[in-house]
Image (cartoon, rainbow, N blue to C red):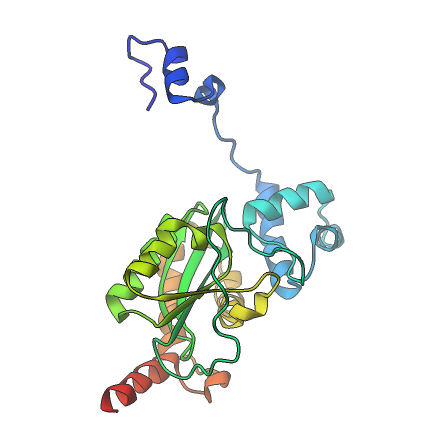
Length: 275
């Protein structure tokens, strides 16, 4: 928005746009290699012990040879978008003014495709740097319907995943999320409301309300991501795509009676259509 070649002084341009003049000269500083290594290990620790806060994660890092303070660990946790999972006043924080919807799934029997979809975001470490992954899952079949990678925690990549899932599979009856600002935003909830989809949100401190997609992250990371060091987002996108194809079509799930998510998803749809 600022035009450095314009006749209007940059000071005046900043005043008109209500921007800080110092922001014109700011240049983002890339993370140090050591911080990237620390974040990668923190992700593994968080997956093994999701109830660990900054103190315990700091202790684990010290045990693994990283001399890092609790304050720096807290900073990296915020950057990664992770925090300890336990009962507390707030787990995921909605944006200012965002509407929070009630949890609709308590006591509900979920046994057919497109009855309930769920979504979540996770941190993905790479050889150099990191990205965020959002996925949309059909609750009854555990089928991954769509997903997107992004290097920022904004709403746009979540919307892209939602639009793709609706375009390919139609609309669910209920869509369940946590109370993160990406999912409570007007853009995201508005898209759901436009399609007549009922919105459900996890209760505060109730990470188990979305437990199936949490299990998806665990499987993805231990069976795919931690075994490889993606060199770029393009490589990460290709390898994660291949894993989700395996997950949906050829990986037997104990919780599904050793059947495949695709088998459950399309099978229940056929039964509904026949009925």
